[in-house]
Image (tube, rainbow, N blue to C red; front, side):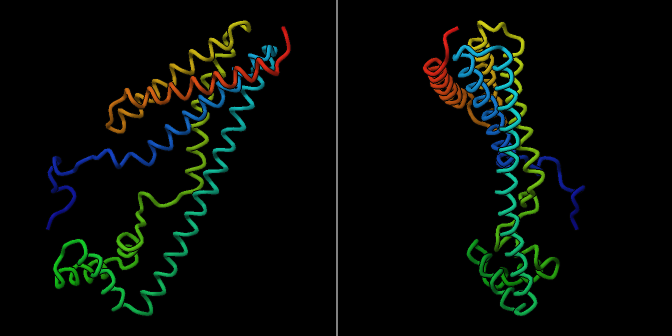
Length: 237
């Protein structure tokens, strides 16, 4: 009998795909925090606002953005959790009312994956004796423990990722002289976006340059647009 401790280390492989869920959410949240907050700060600064108004805009963007990300993620993931719960409850009833049919249903899944009929039926039977609901959740419904919906955790993670990105342009605006806030925030934000793109690509096992260029391109576009709007509707200093 093999146990986890008997398995050689070289068999326990770590794949990049196992990181895609949290990696995408983290990169998206931080990128959104940097880009939306820096663009707002640049737009307000281009309108010749006071230093206090610029900082207020940046802090407001950080707080509102983090709360919005948390609320949106919570609602979205809660809907997923509700759907998963409904599917599991329905599966429990089916297991209680028609065990043999559920064995055949699971066996048919394994048959489609390449097992012969006898082996597919035996695997389904053994797995269901061990954990019937878990087997159907995993192989029929596609619900895994590692990817199960966790609304509160998702909300905090999303808000944290946004805030970690948004704080960078806010700090840049705080430490910059009023007359060059736009340039300081733009420089800090673009460098941060590039670093974020490179780190995200490296963590995902991809080449870093294309993601970094994509983030920089859209960052520059957003900052130019908001700066233009600020100048159009701003007051003369």
